[in-house]
Image 1 (cartoon, helix red, strand yellow):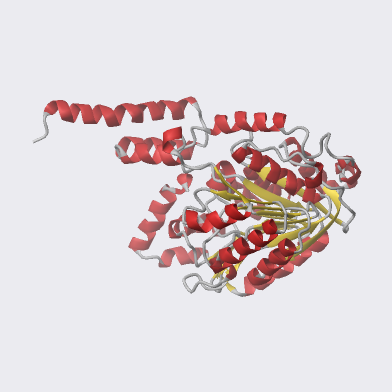
Image 2 (image 1 turned 180 degrees about the vertical axis):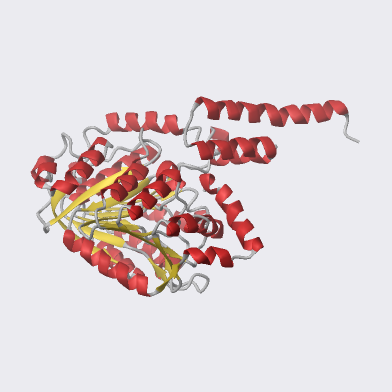
Length: 482
């Protein structure tokens, strides 16, 4: 029998912090569904709800914004600043030079604190996972000045070992190598795997480590970006991490498909700038040497714009960018996303686009490494298909690409999914490709994926068992937190 005083103490210990958390949520309004989900969890799951809020809630968003402002002030002489001897405006693609339908989008992205579009780039779209890895590996092997890598996941498997050994070899040649990894994404990366790199002179850092005794114990705000910059001249970005599964070598997932970009030209300077800021954000080390920002050359005729997004920005950049893309579509908009958990605004935008005659198509993998996310996404299928949205589930591979194609005239490729985490919580990076050539190339690949997928029809919802319907409902209930 528990004494009454102990029961009262335990109740207060659970309810008072929960009440404080609820007051915090009410004082900082955000998306109503997420607020309600957290409040219900705090009320009906005593202790557990509070623990989840402390781990996955968003109470440090303002802290990230203040820290970002300090980072910008301290790095104002880094990229595009006093340490370079060329003018960035020489490569800037002005909105007035763009097609009329693209000018509002360019204006929006620049007002959202993104980089300006640049001309003079050459972009290669990579879909084959093995070829992408080999291309990046070869670029690192050919480095003569420096290597900067940034990944969300870096596995201690054969693929990770190959990259590690290559970095060790380059560091021993005297080439500065830096590797920035997300702490949570690399939880399975043991210290004994990292130590040989550090001993060889490779600089390894982790984004936002969880260190409870220093007040860092939240799982949120992960660095989900994938960046490789070689000598400040060649850059890679997209959705592919470092690991055997991302090369289709794990039977659990089978073939794996990402969409990655190889970029040469002035847009690489923007990739470098993102890395420099992320490196300083994690290490307080300023990479302001001119060597990291060599004068770019005119490498091609592609116009590229890099759009970083994350909780350190005052606006949900990725959310607004996707919403703007759907609104701007005149004839078609096509999505490939591995994790589809849209909010109310995105659902309405997709429905409205379909109802006004725009062909809206989504390809989502049936095979998923996060089943609850797949179920939550499926719960939205009926209301979307009823409005005319075409939804396809891809059965052949783990489709990990994040691609948007608008009117076959411009496209977006990056690290962001169509879910709450990419919209508001994670640090993401998206490349906007203002090139009809690249958009048509991505569209041709999209059509191939459609032929390998099965279309979801509105009537499919009537064939679900009661248990399956309940599972989808429960997953959707958790969707604001996914």
